Length: 163
Image (cartoon, rainbow, N blue to C red; front, side):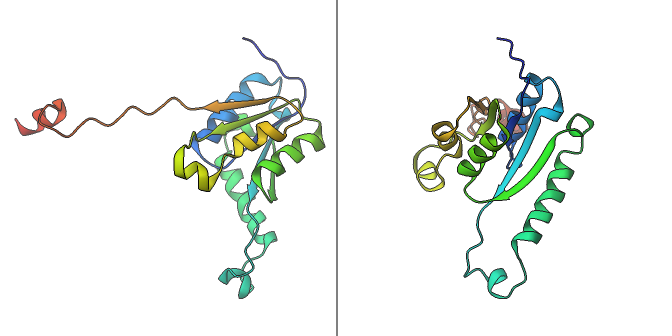
């Protein structure tokens, strides 16, 4: 399947391998990197956190720090023309809102593939985006990581190490 996107594409970015894969996919299907809008979403500050109580941290500094980290993470030449933005809020809702604001044709999001308890507590941003989005959503999943070799006497690495 060959896709070519002529309008804006939003890529939520959390610095994970999953979001890097989503960004790579987005760049492969757009006409120009200028169409890619990379979005990092910071959670709201909790009023009882020490940094808030002692006024040593605020949203402006958090956004500035996140932008610096994004620029460092996306320093490669192929990322030079992309739009980079940091917002504060619920990642799923903010992603959908931003896509609607710019009239995005597509959202490309990485999925961590969490299941069980971790999904129950952490939720699924990708699932929320798919449910709320006004436009198509492409969920990029990484191939499963191969299981580590067993450390038993049958393991070839262990046998070689013992001989």
